[in-house]
Each structure stands twice: as structure tokens, then as C-alpha cells.
Length: 183
Image 1 (cartoon, rainbow, N blue to C red):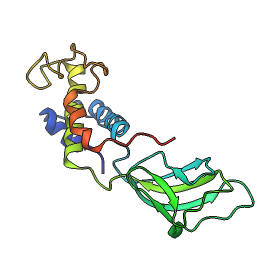
Image 2 (image 1 turned 30 degrees about the vertical axis):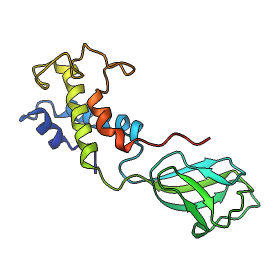
Image 3 (image 1 turned 180 degrees about the horizontal axis):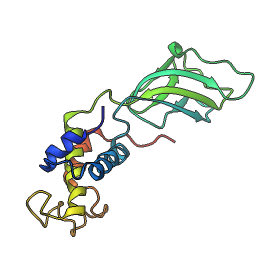
Image 4 (image 1 turned 60 degrees about the horizontal axis):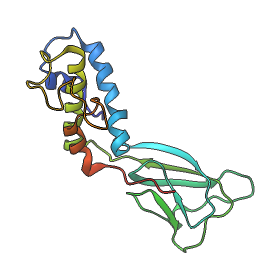
């Protein structure tokens, strides 16, 4: 499931023809990396990463975590861990051993599923507003929302972000923001 379909994008922009479908699809495809840069994966996806840790925990880079698939040492001589013996904080992505022992024989190749399983309505709305804002930079106010001088105005930068991502999009994404990275 995409953040927005082409049909949803056309509905948001009040476009009834197919004349701009190719160009509009490019805009639709560009939404996910921007939104996921703030809130992490939306659609469930399999992730494999190598984590160099010999301490009490492993920290995954992509959250939220849906499930842990495997934890295997990268170097020869170690044994794969039984994921049933591990606890994962699905919000922060921190993995610990249930017996409180440390991870030794690393680095570790960790396979897991990250994402939300679907697109929350608020995230879909944020994506639609972002699409409308970006489309307006291409075609001006005639095809965007009525207004100006706010964060839809392509000539008024949003402090700290230029004008690529409007404040209203950031505010909608706020409840879904990823937690700070764990060192």
C-alpha cells in the first residue's frame, strides 16, 4: 500500500484528466522517502543490517519494529540466537537478551520487519498536503490550494526547512516521529 495512489493524488489536486499522470506519478513516488525520513517505515518491509555490538543490547536503525526474524553472527565460530530468547522494544528498536546476558561474538547480522502495517489516516493526509505543496511549486497557485503567505506559499520559507515540507505536514507527522537514535 502506497502513501498515496495516483487516483488519490489526482483527487487531492482536483485533476480529472490523464495529461499529467506521468509527471504526477513522479511526485507521488517522491512522497514516501520524505515522510519516512521523519517517521520511519510506514509500509512493512524486511530489513537486514549488520550491528557491531558486544554489549547488553543491539540497536536497530529502522523503527517501528514489527518482528524480529534472525540474529546471526557475521564471523565464523558463533551461533545464531533463538529470537524467542530475545526481547525487542518495537518503538526504539533496542534488542536485549531475556536472560540479561551480553551479546558476544559480534558483529551481528539482524533480519527484521520494520513498518506500521498500513498508512495511518493522519500520515495519508500529511502526504496529500505535501503532494499539494510540491505540485504547487511546479504549477503555481492556479493548481494549488487557495491562499498565500502561509506555508503553502512557495516564496515563503519555513524556518529551518526551506519550503519543501510545510509546517502543517510536520505537525501532522509529529505523533509518529521516530525516537532519537541510540548510540
